[in-house]
Length: 401
Image 1 (cartoon, helix red, strand yellow):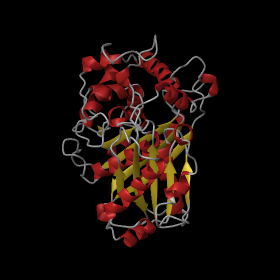
Image 2 (cartoon, rainbow, N blue to C red):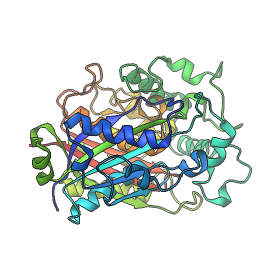
Image 3 (cartoon, rainbow, N blue to C red):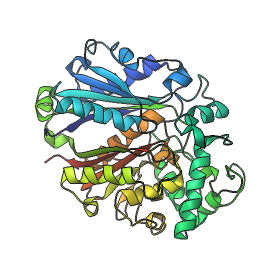
């Protein structure tokens, strides 16, 4: 297979895009990435866009056609992909597949979500209903906010099986809020929380579902935002005039999908997620112990723990303890979610998988904010999921040699 490189990464600040239209979001994402390398959009051969809620929240389809409105992209092979919260990662894979098939030497993957109105406000019940569409119909009944409820059940199961406490899991959001303080694109960059605040029921921190342990600070954000990556083969980099030494290689990738129904399968050890991650490692010729940078899909704090296990930095049931022991800190054994993660950086659904890869690339290039920069970054792993740990997209990245 052809080596695939990240030539440029661009993102908005996550949080509120106010009155920005979907067409403006896509054009900004494309043009922003192109400006970083001084190339016109016409230099891009292929494209893909990932989003999950554009029909239901923005009443807009045919996103590929909106991308083609950016001058230079008309007539190019572009399509939209949807894989729930793994839509961004899927868009990246879509571009990679096109490049591998010889459809071009350069391409752009865009991901976005517009979840707030023009005043930046959120309709919580509508968001809960819309996101609930990404679960099995038989597992929605009786759940007002479907995904917080499902992951509250997963959190309870994780605690029961492994003897983990709410306080153990609270170390994850506390560290992520601390990281977000230094990430200029993070939604919650101005918020600080202590371990006691993350555990105690007080003020905004409350149990989301009666009788289950998930609390406000265990949850990711409702976010607007966009992110984009320009990908290229070696020939594509030459056409763009970018030396490989300034790029990161997507050395391995994997994608797998488990049944959408949570019941009847082992969601604490999700088979598809482990398979996708294993495939990415094998393609890259790498092992988990080689990784010291990672971004995992912490839509809820328990997923920060499970994600740590999926990427191979902890055995099943030991992911929370990896954070408790400080190993996931930027100066720890492996800097995990140094961006702030979905919990503090924000979670504009379609942008999330792209942002994971982009931030990891910044780390490998030594371009992360100094307070968050991992010392001597070697190899990065990303783990992006959709649904109730259903769709998984994993990558392994290395700085080009």
